[in-house]
Every structure is written in C-alpha cells, then in structure tokens.
Image (cartoon, rainbow, N blue to C red):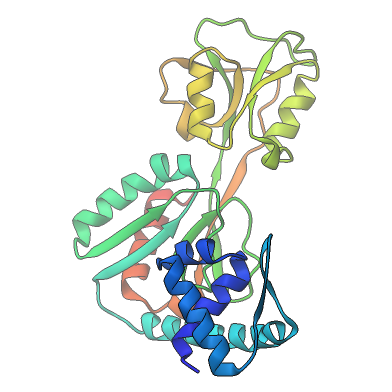
Length: 283
C-alpha cells in the first residue's frame, strides 16, 4: 500500500465523487481515479461502489475508513506538534472569521501586524464555513459562540453591540407593530439568530423583503432603502447613508470568541498575533 493514497481514499469517502475530491486536494479527476484503482489493487478489495449518485463505501471500504481516519489524525497531530515547537517569527498563519468581522475588526490588526512582523504571512479566510482547527484548516478562528472541541484553547474576546438601522430620512416604525415596514434579515439558515428573533418580536407585523448571510450586503441594502436591518455597530455606525433608530430596547449583543489548537500554543508567530489581537480588540 502507498500511504500517500490514503488521503485520496478519505477525500472520496467524504465528498462522494472523484471531481469533488479532486478539487479538495488540488488534483485532477483522472489522477484521483488512477490512484484509487492502485489502492484497491494494493489491498485486494473494492473500496467503493460506483453508483449514479456517486461513490458509496463498500463493507471493506467502511472497515478501512476508521483505520484511515485514525492514521490521518496521528499525522495531523504530528504536524501540529512540530509546528507548535517552531519558535521562528516567519511563516504562514491561517485565520478564519466572518465577512464583516474580517473587514472591520481583523484587517486593521493584520495591517499593524504586517508592519511589526513582515516575515509572517497571514491568510484571512472569511466565508461561512467553520474551518477545523484540529485538521489545521485554520490556525486561529473567531466565532460567535464558545468552542466545544476539547483540544481547542479558547477565550472570550469581545462583546459586539448591535443596532437597528434605516436609510437616512426614511420613516421609522413604531415598536410593537411594524405594519408595512420592510426588513432585511439573515438568510433562513441563520433564522434562529438572536437578532432575527428579536426584530420579529419587536415588529411582529413587519414583512421580510430580502435576506442575506452577509452583513455587509445587509448594510448595503439598508443604505439603498430596501428595509430596516439589525447590524453590528462597528460595521454600521461609520456608514453615512444609514442611521441607528430607537425601537424602545436595544437588540441583543453577541460575544466573540477566539480559539486555537492546544498543540499550537508554543508557536511564536501565533502567540505574537494573539497578543496584538487581544491588545486591540479585547473588551
């Protein structure tokens, strides 16, 4: 068995197709197929059933999956331990956070960090996906809820205040009603977020005209007069075309947490970035 074929096996098992697995690993689809056939020949078993809906693990493939995942975890642990012992202030750091938080909160800190530590390259990932710290998909992550992975070191960073915003000069609704008032909210996947629950309680008769999972898009729609939006104050307060309005009570604030894998706590460049982030953003 060629051990380097195990990541191929795991990617196909997780994604269910050669194409998706190839994109995950940066390989071509023919290469993925060739290496899978080589692995099946080496172990003498058919590991996947090829169906119209994709690749499905056979019983033999299912048996192999657990062993391959444990081998992967050991390899990742070794990488983390070796990386965590690196005391040099150069190299790559991957940071994960939400879109608006990256633009308004993290980017200014990274600009300052680049002046202090020019040999450290920080890669900022700002999409809705939760990047895995144990799998080294990110070295540092910001989230709006505490981390529940036991191997992640985390701390509360800051409380973010929210407000209700409308286009400057537009009519303001009355609390407890909201009849005829258009709203710009989070998309359905985030429909249970505190700000969505709050605004629908305060303005029960308001109607939703637009949704987005991107806070900056919500702010832009609000500025264009599409509807009211509940937005983080660090994002919305500087926007000249919108104003914060009073509906009798403030929207719920949100906590921001930062986390990193415990094996990375001795990584000098991560420690340096953490210290600057906490100095600039913690409250």
